[in-house]
Length: 85
Image 1 (cartoon, helix red, strand yellow):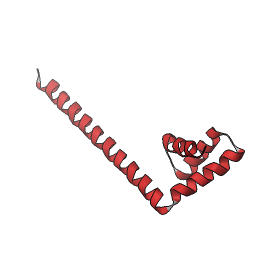
Image 2: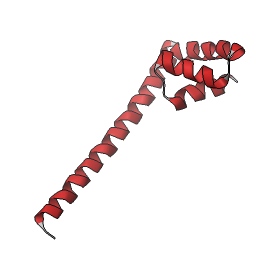
Image 3: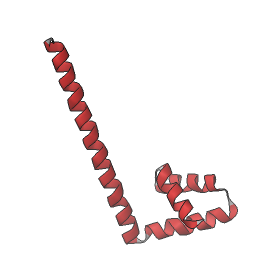
Image 4: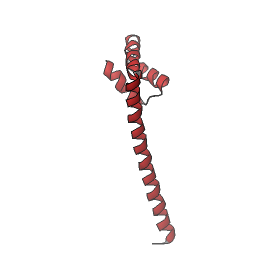
């Protein structure tokens, strides 16, 4: 193996490790965000808003409005809508 191949492999391994580290940090931050939302009562407000929106709109539009207003991911907004159906 030449040095250029070895250095390329090392760079790939380092980038892969960094990517995994970032994914773990992202997951931890999402869990902390959810905990804070529940602690402050904002999570309950989102659920109430989802209930009200579902009365006059579709599930897709409700998910979209939650995502736009609160900056939620698609999965997070969908879970809130599913919890109030």
